[in-house]
Image 1 (cartoon, rainbow, N blue to C red):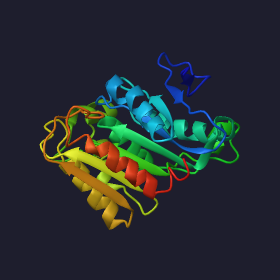
Image 2 (image 1 turned 180 degrees about the vertical axis):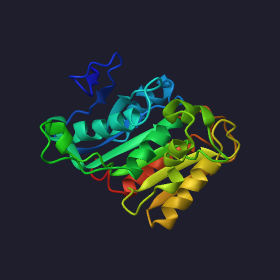
Image 3 (image 1 turned 90 degrees about the horizontal axis):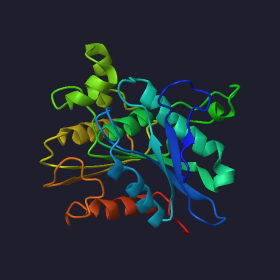
Image 4 (image 1 turned 45 degrees about the vertical axis):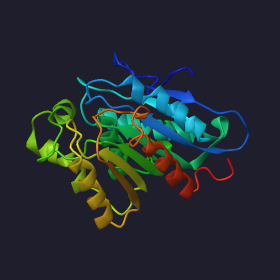
Length: 258
């Protein structure tokens, strides 16, 4: 599980990476790229490798994206997430991945990042000199766990401070309930009703935006649970999210025949 640089020729002191968690076998499988949370100031370890191993247990290839965080600002994290999706598609034959089933999963600020990739996706640059850049950065599914979404009344201010600074226009531009389109991918959301870190209204606002654009989504709100739970394995009610998500992926056809 060697971490691969996302930008091998970059001169940045922090070169973001993609760490593969690949399963054995010759049959092409769906793949999910995991973006840990951390308020765009760090990346929480418990929302990285343990999540990738859980995805492996569902019969899916997984990757952990260590995207850039503060002092890097937008669009650096989004560039990294989209680059991760492009890289997975570029190596699809080598890594035995179905290039039409490449998803993103993120927690908290990582949830904001994966929803950003869903909102602002592009289909690649076919004439680019870099062969990876020719691939689409558009995720085929998004899983957002207690995500940061809005810079308005229910904002997690620290995430927006680290991502875009104080500029009101930049903060609104990255308030994701305003930029969902009909091309957004199917989306799975979950949160807890009494999350004091990132209020549940973030998930509710995003679900409403998806609904208005006719995008398929699932939304699960659990009554109690602190922010940053990850797998939530110690909370019987909230840990149900992994089963719900597995069923959702099965319904999408991502686990068929696995």
